[in-house]
Amino acid sequence: YDVPAIRAYWSARPLTSLSRTSSLVAKLATWLAGFLGDLASGAETVERNAPRRAAALRDLIASQGPAFVKVGQAVAIRPDLLPKAYLDALQELLDQVAPFSSEEARALVRAQLGGLDLEDVFEDVGAFDAPVAAASIGQVYKAKLRESAPGVDASEFETWGGDVAVKVQRPRILEVVTLDLIVIRSALEAAIATSAKGFIPVLDVAAERFLEELDYTLEASNASRFEADMASVEVVRGAVKVPHVYRGVSGRRVLAQEWVDGKKLTEITSDPSTGPLRAKLVQTLLNAYMVQFLETGFLHADPHPGNFMLMPDGRLCILDYGMMTTIEPEQRIAFIEYIAHLSARDYDKTLGDLVNLGFVPKELANDPVNRAIVTDALNAQSASRVGELSDKLEEMAKLYPLQLPPYFVLILRAFGTLEGLGLSVDENYAIVDECFPYVARRMLADDSPRMRAALRSFVYGGGDRLKISRVRDI
Image (cartoon, rainbow, N blue to C red):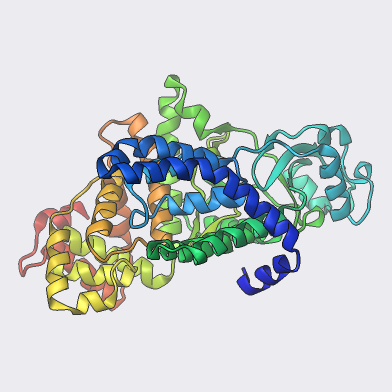
């Protein structure tokens, strides 16, 4: 994500840039006129009309393409930037895209295959007549590889079979996305309101991640690393399925993966007869995400229900590795320390943990007055469910100089999805309680000074006397 290079590219094409900017201004004018009218009428009118204005803005953003949707989704998790009505509306953002022509898709696949005919690689080229799914970046076809297909190793075919999901990137998607990103950034840079400048860092982070998603070779590498991670930890070994990538017929714009049959999480949660299946899926998902979060540090960062699937043999299949995030060892340790200190009600230490986690600036923690204010606020916070915790963190971010790090927002999303599934099985399900055995195992298994200190804090409850109930919990 090179802003000067993107700006230079589109500056050399002024007519295209001007046309896109003019189109956006024309579409935004009606919404902006209504919003300015609310402002002129006073704060009460602004608040009363906020849900309606927010919904209209969401629909406008959704109609403008994938770059706008991605940026809108990034802003939707920043309570320090927008009022609640707008956050709620933007969290419902979905792509509004039609499939592109299969003729273009076949041409892209042929180009990836080095000019080979599709018949040389696939059993039935008719599979590319219509996609089975379409999204903002690309669309998916279900096809079957020939056993002797160029680029496919015989052992691959024998192990994973020939049925494949072929994801084909939209034509000219890079040009479309970079143009919109630079138009959005230029508008924010030119904005009169100082508050608009706060959106630029959010835009830049979202843009960098989005452009990474456009490189399917990176997604293939992510899938391979994730598969190795899941195989390296006993608690999830053999329980989590990662579709195999056929690298010989994949590249930057085409990704061929093993086709996996099963039920999407969305199908399972809508069927009242699937209670036992949901219970099994909850446990497997919890295992998988705690391993990612506390052990491997390589987190699947797109945890919407459509990316989780229960296979007929009971394994969990996780799809789509375009968005991943890394949780550094320091962050993993700091989170365990935070849980230990929080459970021991050692709130002064929890503030230091939040500095290590990236929530609180060091300058605030070192200032006695601000430190006391935030520590008192932390004392008042308690939540056993992710939804409650997320709401409270958002409220605190508005009142105090706190920030929600991007990696933690992704964790909240992942565990929020998991908790929703858990609540569909057990109305008393509380994911904070369910996570405790994993945190305890890390404290017991790690002999480092920091983990020993965290364990002591937990079992002594912040005092000098051993808490028998806490030992029993462990």
